Length: 537
Image 1 (tube, one colour):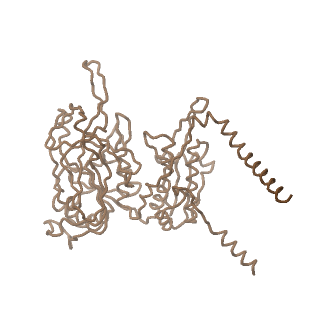
Image 2: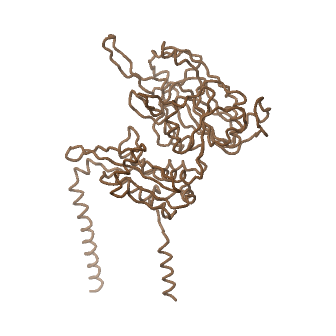
Image 3: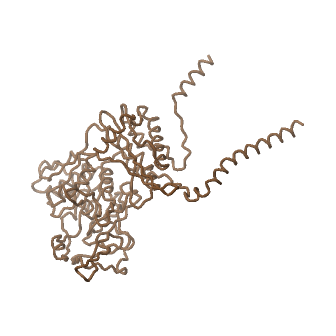
């Protein structure tokens, strides 16, 4: 009987996985959001990790963290198969990755003998579930950060990357988002980069509102990118009631209007307030865009000819204060760990409404050396002077998120004439979200030689700013009902060795590492023998 009980206990314990996470940052503990995704991801899941072969210690650490995370996920899901590509399939798989836009990462390192070593690494994983697949980039690259810092950020983002991929694959249907048209919004070619990033997660449509009050009901989010023409009462009613029914809206609106053609031809243009007739709607929803232009000493640099001889131009980078580099907030998952966001002729916004029960959070703001130019004003490209005495304002908010139950603008108004299929006007919304940015230029991407440039790419400095990450994260946050985006705020402490000292003291460290355990063992043996001798003599 006892033997049978012990056998049953042994069989039960053999199938039970018990883990204790002793790390201070809980890096080996899956979040509740990830566990919920794994619970919903029913079925066999096949994950191919391409981060294999010879690589430096940093990438080996990333690979180890990847396999550790997948092992933790498998302990919950029990149906995850993890493997590397077979040797005979490696080249074919790599070509398929390149054709999908996921090329190798070239790593340049300097060996101790001074020679430069170049290796090709494939930091990707392919997740397959329910007959569908997606590629998960394992490496995050931020310009200006060291390789160790980028690898640490990549380790922090692993859980979100795999959880988001599984969440996308286990959905029964692809969710839809819509770019609004009809008010002079940015055309499709100027939001191509944003649309391409969204297309990995959503079906992306474009269209005008029309007159049907329920035309937006099939969309998870509506994106309004830099409109230039006023909104009618019909448009405002449709958008207002869409929010009341739980719709999510991302507003990218300018507070100031000017002529781009006059600015490029003459270098001077008048700037006046841009009246989109949305002030009352946005005010009722808790925010106001100011009709002023932000200037900031933390800004893009533009090349200016400083030579007096037109035959021998000499270009020198000069700060262009009308193109601020906006600081992202680490308090929100939308902007956590992204690069500064570039904008041109941005405005600022204010929160209004007092204690209206909404959770409002600043996402992007100016630096500690900024100022506001009120309208009407004159913009002059030749005025590149930056008198520091002017720039006394700090942290002017340019983008913000709002979450909660919004009050309808039409709570005590009649339905505008021309609206069809209106039904009963809702006065209070269900819990929902909105994001507003007082800079339409954030979403704009340029074209070069027939190819679209990424949003936020500066051709002069060849720097990629955080516009694309901000835009994608914003829509993912708007459409996220499970709190997955909070996983982006997971942090792993970066503990680096002093490479120079470790190389110089290599012999000493090796000697201590070998001798110390032996001396400790010898000391323990001597103490044990002495105690035994005293006790038994």
